[in-house]
Image 1: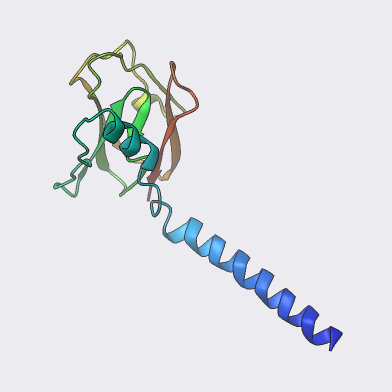
Image 2: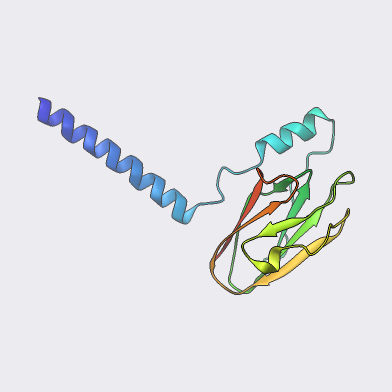
Length: 140
């Protein structure tokens, strides 16, 4: 009886970690819908509209008050990413481990950083004013 319980426990733990690894490798953008950002906008009676990406080769990300919408993007190799400041009260000054995604100065409302990424990898973009919020760019 005790051996059966240990086997069941081992199978449960193994299946949990296998599911976690499969989710992290194949579905990194699932369940990152900026729930807190949408809640904040709803409480302030702002329009709650997600960013629409109609063009497959261009991925659009909006930046407002230090938060990115969406927080995780997966793009293909040699595709474009555009990060646009939609905040009327705060400037956008970005830092990243990829020099193409850094801003040389503060960007005002409706200014954007557009880059074409050729090297596969995972890049992190954050604001100098709000380093606790970040954008994860996965290039495949």
